[in-house]
Image 1 (cartoon, helix red, strand yellow):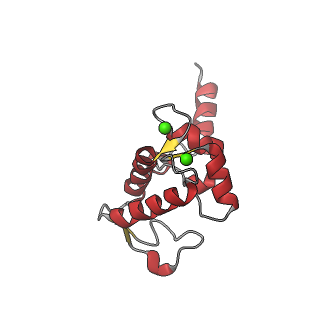
Image 2 (cartoon, rainbow, N blue to C red):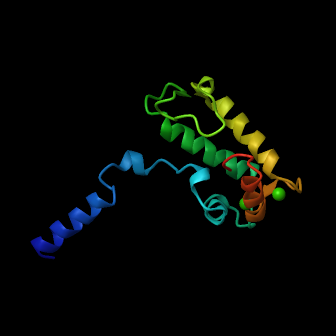
Image 3 (cartoon, protein in one colour):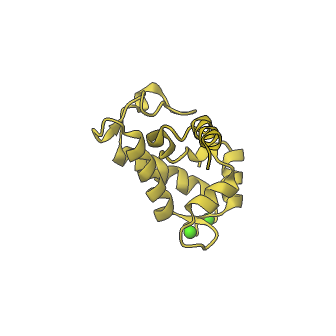
Length: 132
Ligand SMILES: [Ca+2]
Ligand SMILES: [Ca+2]
């Protein structure tokens, strides 16, 4: 590999944002992902839907990645309140974060089988139930 190729690759890496691994390691907000990506990313046991445990694991990973100062809670700077969340929703603890996830999960799981299908996620978003 010659020097030109190496520097071109380095430029590409910087352009893609790989120069800041801590940012890149933060799992994206589920609301920012298409429903099909939510299922394919979170469905670890391959049953085609996202069960509560899979969703909670993801929510937990995201919480800890966002908790930059590792004090066990997220302030408005670490996690700006999303649509439908007031300024008083920060700081938020891991427990409150998980409870909020659980409430949204229940709202989305319209057939009550404990698992969110792509269709349930699409329908829930269309019904304005938040960004699951
Ligand atoms: Ca699953
Ligand atoms: Ca379901």
